Length: 298
Image 1: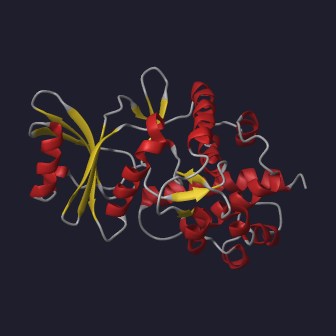
Image 2: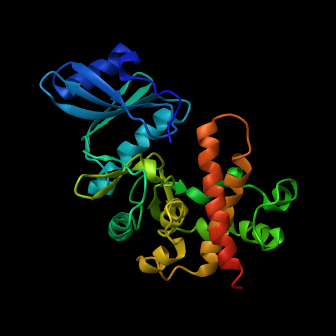
């Protein structure tokens, strides 16, 4: 899962490169861009002459990318060791820069049974740390997502999904999206997938790319992530019922799945970005498969 080409720190304005060198304590001599992800912002591990390292994110304000860098900075203290430690953050004209400790490891490519056990531990810690949002500027994820909803009432006619239950039921669930998700007050990552989870050599999982000041019910991130586990052969319902969110009402899970699936099913058919569209198609298929199995029990 990757962008076609990430911009490099070496291509950024002098002020940005000087800021990073100042925090590093020496000039950057080696840069390695992150391979995973879809966002066209700078995301590079840089090394100084002595071997000092930082992971740098940087982008200009105005197109959502610099704002994402700022959001990560605002969330860093609350996120704590769920993600990398923030080493420093700054503004260089229109650019925003954040530097993090380098987490040794690689983005998860295939979810293993050991990963699932570790993920359940991480999920419980997320529930404790992110239960409320003592951060200025947060807003409901549900509200920001409304323009992205697939509109099953019309989408189901133009692109019928591979699901056995009536599309009208999907539309009914989707219509409750805001009512179910907007009241949640837990801090919400909003984009949990394998490429945003680093597996350290001993198996510990660290979540990266905290880029939104969103709130949602605490279970929403796990529901968003479980179809990704399903792609690797894990039963999403079984994992949910082993988690600290096992008591989440079934109807709330159904509402979240219907909303997420509609967006993915619509967008995977849009032109451009073959890797992105492939990822969205995989998401849509797993979201719809899980939702279909749940709704057939009704």
